[in-house]
Length: 157
Image (cartoon, rainbow, N blue to C red; front, top):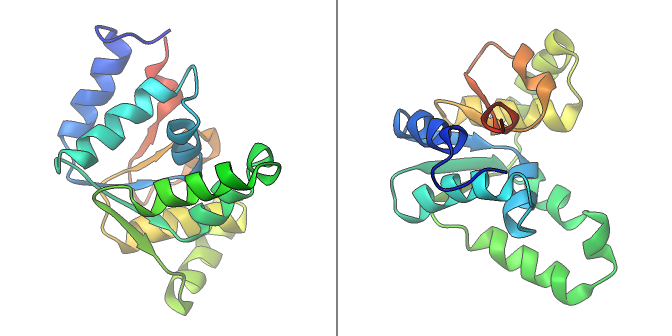
């Protein structure tokens, strides 16, 4: 378990202090909003830095669809509304609409790295937003070379 004094947690803090803007994968929002037992403490670092205006975040509008399609939320309309509210009220977050330029560039990354189209759109959004890293917990993003990938699993020891 990651604790306040955990080297893994402080490693993520050190990494995030080196960047001003990160792309955020949808799963990070789910971990944060659902208080995930393993990864929630790590995503809290990201969202706290954003709240303190020490970090800017960006994500594709696709993240909203991914969050709201989370199976548990489909059964509870009040929770669905709460997650929607949390997403739109995330401090220091730029939600980027998908346009033709993002789609064209995402199609190239999709083929180049064998990504799903939503994943390619997420990472392309981060690149177009001039993010200095992309925070995710999905190993397949390690293949992407266009920007540094910050994998949450690397900070769980």
